Amino acid sequence: MKHNIKSKFSLIFVIAILVINASYGQQEILLTKYTYNSLFFNPAYAGSHGASIGTANIQYRNQWIGFEGAPTTLMAGGEINLMKDKVGLGVTIYNENIGVESRNEIATNYAYRIKLNKGYLCGGLRLGLSFFSNDFSRANSEVPESNFNSYSVISGGAGLYYHTDGLYIGAAVPTLFVASKSKDIGDRVPHIYFHTGLMLGDEYSKVKFEPSLLLNFQKAVKPQFTFGMNAWFSPDFAIGAHWRSEDAVAISSEIHFLEKFRFGIAYDFTLSPIRNHSSGSIEAMFGYKFTTNKNNPRIKSLRYGGHF
Image (cartoon, rainbow, N blue to C red; front, side):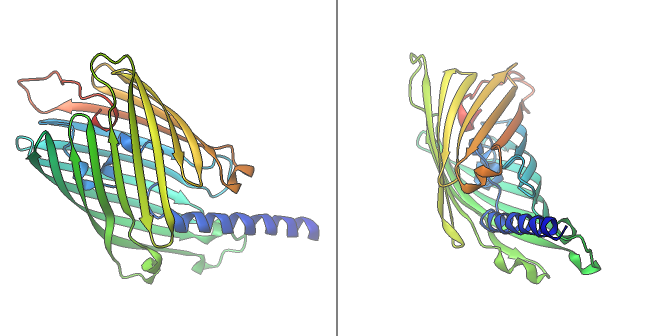
């Protein structure tokens, strides 16, 4: 009996240590298909799909399947291009659970767009309201009243984004500052993102390749990068491979249909020691594109990668 209790306690302790370390390093959303909607970390992305065009997306990630307390994330967002391609507005909401912590957030995004050479240079601002709660009863069989606490945080961020028909490059700090009455935000540190990608091929290419790179910097851990390569066999279908440093390799697929819809899925093969306790991570995405121009109800396809 004592041996079983000791074994269970040891298992809970190991899981708790791993989840705490993971949550400390993962204070912002972690995605494999981040190109699907970069609005979640760069507010300047709003309005980048073209004049009078908007998008709506929903994305779900189950990280480290089978690992108790591992992150699960559900998010939704939308953005629209207004004022003759000069302004982008967007909103994102999400729920994420990691170990004993649950986080809910809603954020508004504003981007101002300037025509520059063959593309657009965009500057964006982000304002978010987050609700955090910690339920320590998930890790303890004895539940004193003090084992639950919650607090709210106001945060603000900014970003830059330049894009043409075949290239994009951006940088953002989605949590540039935080404000809260709670002392529990002391370990919340800014994440700096840099992302870029391009399309290789021309109108005569049977297959077009889309390499992409996301860099994530924060002082708590060493820099992390995600490198991806999509192969587009038509304007509506792609398969991809991705590598996230010291974490996972992944495969993905994306399909566009009925001109306005798209669906994507990705599966991660974990490379860290957590692979001994997990069967990997899965991510699923669904998107819709629309136009506000009544004189042109049919949307010209922007296809491929972040340009949908």
